[in-house]
Amino acid sequence: MSEYLRPTFAPEIYHDEHGLPIDYGSRWPGESPPAGAYSHVSNLRRFAPLHEVAEALIKWLLNTFEVIIEEDPVVATDLIQVPNDVVRAVRVVPSDFKAAPLTFVLTSFPGVYLHAGSLHDFHFPVCGCDACDDKVENLIEELEWTVRTVVSGGYYESFDPLPADWIEYRLNEPGVGMQSGRSRTEDLPKERVELARAVLPADGQWLPWQELAPDSLAADN
Image 1 (tube, rainbow, N blue to C red):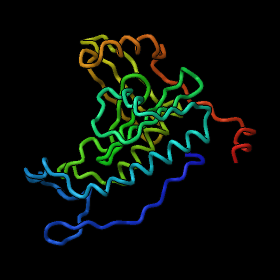
Image 2 (cartoon, one colour):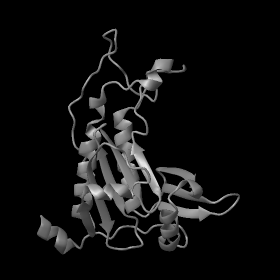
Image 3 (cartoon, one colour):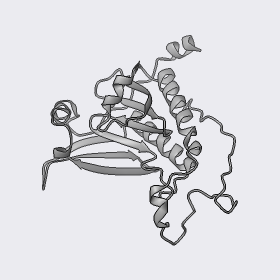
Image 4 (cartoon, rainbow, N blue to C red):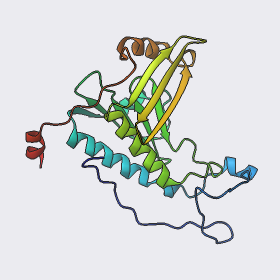
């Protein structure tokens, strides 16, 4: 991403109960995790870099695009489901109302919730238990990619009335990757659904964010 610099992190090695290094992301090759792994979360500290990356992304957005920043615990309510351990919430609204806003919610887990556009949240990590075996480097790349795809105009939200009433999303960066999903509108707050019907682009595609004019960048530097 132009002008974005990922924070650097000192490598940390965690050990299991036998004193062996834990290779997160490859703990259960070809086998099911033990039953206890689903209810256990070890070494929470390893997720801390997600906060630093979120902070760096917010700074990058502010310094690169025409946006309004609002930092207030109340903007955490942009999320469809608000966690009970919010430590910081920042809403970043692009100047063009046809571009999707982003809200970063940092939790004490530590993790990052990202609300994009009207009706979709992205969680980093989704769960965090030992069975999920999240590799933090992968979560960082997913967070960065999600933000990059939204601001570059590769984010879509649309309603699909058949066979049931669904709201769908798609993240698409040609040549790099695509992700999609959907939710039943009956499972979402009614007033949020009605607002989304009014503001979503007709073709479902949110526009790219407007970059700051070169003279503005020069003044900031």
